[in-house]
Length: 376
Image (cartoon, rainbow, N blue to C red; front, top):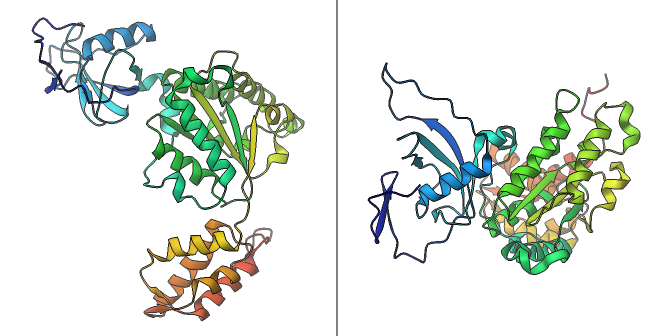
């Protein structure tokens, strides 16, 4: 809503002054709000329960009232018309410290409460160029970035559904997180298991809520990790009663029966052979994530060793040779970390070949074997 005392140079909202002449501030693509009520209470006042009956109408109301206000995550916006001083906390702003404008999407968190609870928070400085190997998948991510910057330009040729598959620890989720840092758009990073409901119908509902949230805040990216948990072949209906309805819900959203313009879905799996055939057919591109070769292992080792708190006495070239067959995660967790910890509890100042040999021995002995006592 428009304020009567708005001057040509500034607007005052939520204890903030926004200078209209600062045209260099980026416009918010989307903000996610949580209603928090009044900042004070007394016995004559009862805090109203906020219920939004028309989402698009509320968005218009809120956008007009807060137009020109800086949206900063963790700060507050206050209604000044219908419920004076009723507060909303800014949970997310895309990009952060941007200005609410005419094209800003405004979402109330309780509309998508389950989705917000299940989204992983992205906190990393990783960039796509920092991910070693997987060049084809990285190039596809660059195309996705170009599309999200200008969805209208691609039209019917827009990237829509992409599958990453391959052994665990080869960088599927890592690449998605690096993509999140490259983009100034929302990325919904969701474990597929969180989209399985307790009752028949819950899973399908959660999937529709996820895509609705992404569409509301477009342009955006949905990354579904371990998609085989919900995209099972329908022959497994006897194992879980909601398999068919969950697969059908996924097909409906991936087919784009409603216009999902500006929304890209990336899915990842270690077991593509378990996916339903119909779901597999919806992916325009499938990228295999492979175990790194010797040169890639060498690059990974150089990258990891730089940050280790103990000096490595062994040559990186030697470590690249003995780590054949290891994924990127194995190299970091099973080789380097294991050797480091052994050196630390021996009070050694350097990590020797003996420490790495023990790490390799432990890795080989545990490879493809179930945990001890698992079946006893």
